[in-house]
Length: 201
Image: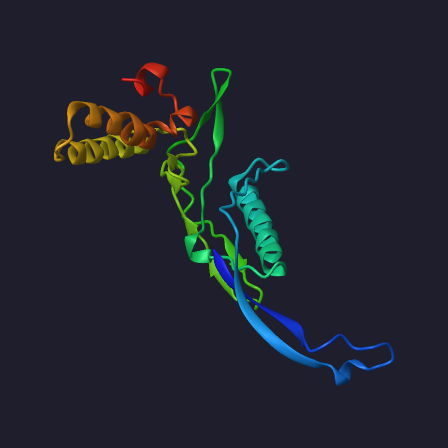
């Protein structure tokens, strides 16, 4: 998120004042510059340690997100509420293991965050089996990798079709494959369950 910052500096004109001469006798020139400051993406995680309920978890999400919004404001940044969303997960004990309640939905719960003027914004709810399209990897809280697989498959088809339509020689096409296509497709594989055999043709 970019946020303009106006920097005002005073540059002296003429010789430095001698000892005993007041600053008012010194001519000044003001220079205004606009700088950009940025805040990277931020993920906030919250749990429900006291009641183990989704209601407590959502309340903690809202509290933590509000603290982050305040910190963003203190350093002169802007919080893009329209880009934010929240997801929730619940587990149940089954056969000695904890499994995710994939059928649970929490549309009836709400998360609100206030800006520095006190205006509240409702944060979008996203189902826990929907991906977070951040930083080039489609992550789902449930570890569902179907969206990531479909994304990489479409990307592979697009890039290879572009190479196919060129007049590359065999060596040039191989170089394009190794230098451009494969790095673009496989760089997030380390965060998935794809094997080494999947990554290297």
